[in-house]
Amino acid sequence: ADNLFLLHQEPRVLAVDCSSPGYLTISVSDASVASSWVPGTLLVGDKSLGCLLDGRNVPFYRGVKSVKANDENFDSTGSETGSLHVETSEASVENCFKNADIKYRSVPVGHAEHPVFPNKASLREGLNSTDKRRQLRSILPDINFDWRE
Image (tube, rainbow, N blue to C red; front, side, top):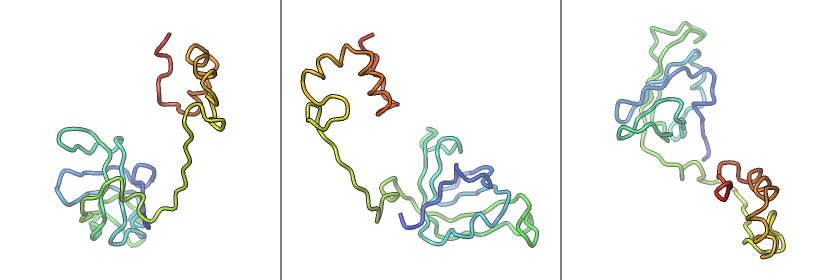
């Protein structure tokens, strides 16, 4: 995306209320956090922000339509904690990759350039090898390769 903002990685974002359809209420410690949020900015939040969709705590993707600060809570420097009311449109994870220049290369298991199993023999012995499972974990850390143990 041309303008992507990860709310869960910004320390000035204290909390997000996403209970109103089409709006986010974002508690911030500094209103300037939103200075780059122009219409079309994609706001992304992970599960840590606690937004529910159909009763499930899931990441969310929203496009900015407009941003309004609750002026009562901020001083002239924007340094006090306050709320930003953000009108949003629905977005999806695909929007994160719009206009991205991503290069990806994959080789099948058994291919000479495969990083773990360059041939069928290495695959057969690797399924029973602790070293190969360790190597797989380093490449794909979120997958459980201990299924045979």
